[in-house]
Amino acid sequence: MARTIATVVDLDTGNLPMICAKTGQEADLLAPVEFTNTPPWTWILLLFGFFPWLIARHFATERRVGHLPLSNTALKRERWCGYAFWTFLCFGLAMIVVGFLTENAVPAQIGLGTLVGWLIFAILEWVFVIPRGYLNGEWVQLTFVNRRFADAVDRWYDRQA
Image (spheres, rainbow, N blue to C red):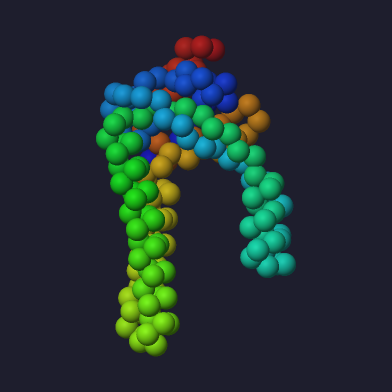
C-alpha cells in the first residue's frame, strides 16, 4: 500500500486523476470518504478512563468529507465488508446474550470467538479495504491507497507546480 498527499480543495471537488484509489484500475465514480484529524493530546485522557478518552476524541476530532475516485469493484468490496462487519458484530453479541439467558457456556464462547474474529476483521478492513486520509492544514495525507493512484496524484501535483 502506498501513500500520497492531496489538497483539501481537490478532495472536496473530486479534482483528482480518475484512477481508483484502492485497485489502481480506471475509476467509475467519485465516492465520499471521511478524513479526520484528532489531536494527540486526547491520548492522555486514557489515564482517566476509556469513556473520557472516547468523548474527548469524538468532540476534538476534525472531520471532513472528500471525494475519491473509486471503481465499482472497490465500492462493492467496501459494501460487502460493511455488511460482514455488522453481521459478525450482531451475531457475536446475540450469541453472548443467548449464552447468558440460557446459562450455557457454549453459545457465549461461540459469541466471544466471533467477536475476536470480528475485531481482527475490522482491523484488516480498516487497513486494506477503506482508503484513509488524515487532515493536516490544507492538505490531506492519503494512506493505504494503490501505488498506481499515488503515483498519478504525485504526477498531478508536479504538473500543476
